[in-house]
Amino acid sequence: MHSFNLASVGVPRGHFSHIFANEAGEATGPEVLIPIKMLADERANVILSGGPKQLRPVIKSEIVKNLGLQTTYLERLMARERYIAENGCGDR
Image (cartoon, rainbow, N blue to C red):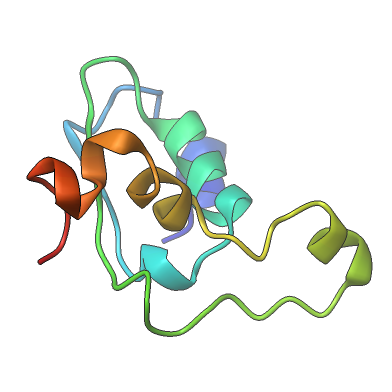
């Protein structure tokens, strides 16, 4: 079920304690962030799964490419210092 459907039937933000985004490695930022914003509150646990080095999002629009949306939200997170493998974290 899509997050819009949940919101349209009255499911409030914060209803779920956990939100899973499967295949986040091939989803654009808006595809991941809009459902999170619609459903999560500060207590929700958000879990992103998927390989950031596997399938990429399919972007056909040059405008969208120019906005940088070919880089997934998961890739952006994995590029942060906290997840860099040399710092003792990240994928090994």
